[in-house]
Image (cartoon, rainbow, N blue to C red):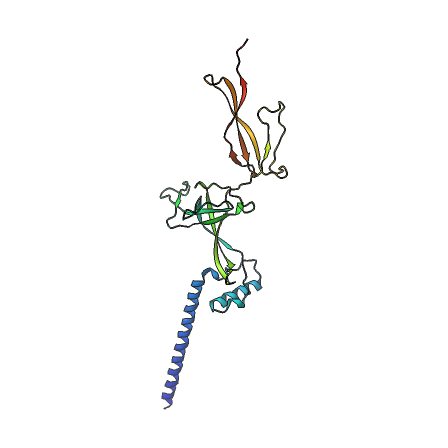
Amino acid sequence: MGKDKTDSFLQADMQKLRGQFASLRHTVQAMADREQQLGALVLPDPYEDETSDERIRNLEQKVATLLGQPQELYKPVLLPSRLTVHSVAKITDEGPDSEADYTDEKYWVIEQRIKNTSGTNVTDLAFEDKPSGLHVTATDLGDTATEGHALATDGSVYVLLFRGTGQEVDSETGKLKPVTHYYFRGPASGTYDTPDAIGRTPEGAEAADTDTWDRTNPTEGKDGVSKNILTGVGYHDAGDEKLYGYYCTFTFDSIGLLATISAETRYEIDTLVECP
């Protein structure tokens, strides 16, 4: 009888352990499924300069989220987006569904891939649109201060695209939701909304012009500079027998890069007359 009781107790303990193990396995699987569903909702890894209290708070929130506890028990903490290099992208002038181009610091970009099939590591790279690649909105960090839109959108500008996975508070639920942003730092560019016009005009004074411009010390209230530059002199015997000059207005942005060139303007220099 003693042996039978022992076996009975062992079987009961084994059954209990099996139940506990099954419950534990179910919990672990549920947590894994929950983790996958939540994705970026789980807080990003802490930054190096994060305090111990912030780390603890973030871990507590992560555990609470995974265990399905009410989010309201924890005050939402918005952390800066964590940037990672994503890919090379080409700037274009419309969205994937023919959406219009932006007018501020945002641009439409298309993910690229290297199309070189031969060569060495010193061969010039060539890119092409990546099949099923991203065609998304990205922000140029160089344009954020002025909210400008200075980069060419004809497909000639390629940038290194960064992905920032952060969080925002849902306006309806008040809970954190995952948000993915894309960023890049385009070629340096300035502004030329109100350029400083310097230099002479046609038929101006005979004296040499003394206007100067220094991008490190511009005229107050002005950004960039514009100047009329002589582009040619012409006389056509078969024409109206007048000597003409031609000039264009060259405009440079606030960091000295050429921004625009106007069409030529013609002006009369002299008219030929018969000698007496």
